[in-house]
Image 1 (cartoon, rainbow, N blue to C red):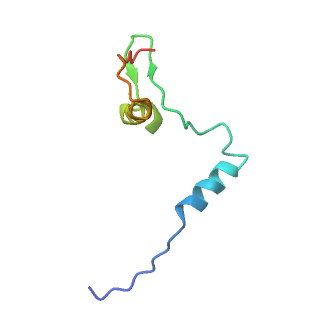
Image 2: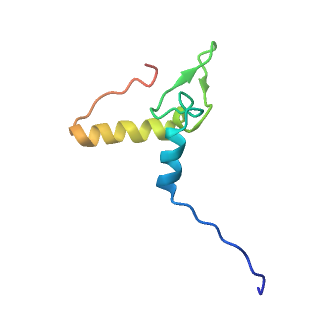
Length: 76
């Protein structure tokens, strides 16, 4: 309990802005949720934006903003 540690902090917004401004990062970031399926019609999860959570968040924000109830076909 008497150990001394060095703590480094970064402003997350600045880090994300620098990542998005980098030419090496261009085209390698999915910022829109998507659903991917393989040839057997099985769902493929490859990163955060291909997961159900990201899709559900986007759809729920859309529904709240438009105050509408729609039948969502997750396969399209």
